[in-house]
Image 1 (cartoon, helix red, strand yellow):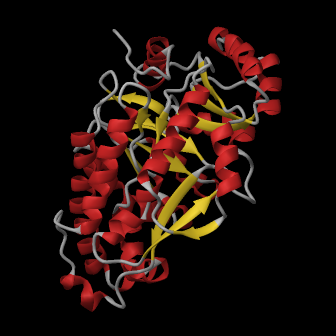
Image 2 (spheres, rainbow, N blue to C red; image 1 turned 180 degrees about the horizontal axis):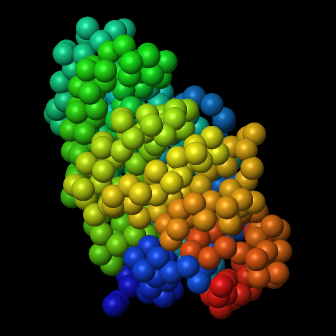
Length: 363
């Protein structure tokens, strides 16, 4: 296999290890990404304010991602470097129906994300909605895909985006509170919203794979790094605040239905959604779970052994602070079958010394 991403010089070996985790579900190894200080983010923080902003200049965004990924090139970790269309985050899906899209700048990450206010005053307006790719927001989406693809070619990848599917899409239509109420009071409208969501998400993400070439037959992922095939990224967030029964009734089918249109998918689970772990891990087509950390809940890193027992060999992606990761690494206490996204790594030299240990680590 000849690897052709200039900013990932060890890409062949990295992809081999990622296959072991996501395809073979090896439980005796660990993988890691080392997040070292990055000048591109530091410069972004100096030149951008926290808060609402306009849709950015794409050439400025291309320059940011090129600088960010290029600076990570000397780090010999398990990352496949990629950029993310954060501007298309939630706003794209509501924007396609004329929603009030708002952009939000985060100087600490270099991201500009989007969101949208509820589109409808009530469900009586639902039948007015019509999805078409002949829309300025779809043109904007395709233009950003093509611009990023051209800029990234041969250097770094383009990560798949989050879906806004199922109840997440209903949230965009009428808001979260009304959606939860209508699961009981108006379930037929929720079913109609879920059907429309599938149509929209399928077109959005089929277009992604039409425009963005696979890397060595796989999809780049900002958290999971790379997975073989056309892999999508789904969200179970609405069910973090419901019972498992509600997930089984309203969540499983839309996720499995759209996973089946591709080669599977990944999900993330926040701290308040860990009661879903067993149910989520049995989703057909699931490739990995990213474990989110949230205020008021134990860090996923601190409860990894317990979570692993609940899901068997399902691969995890878990955030870890460098001092905690280093201590567990040295004491041989890390949980296997996990990709560790390690923050606060002091420098490249430390990162590479640590990765020597990671590559030789066996459970």
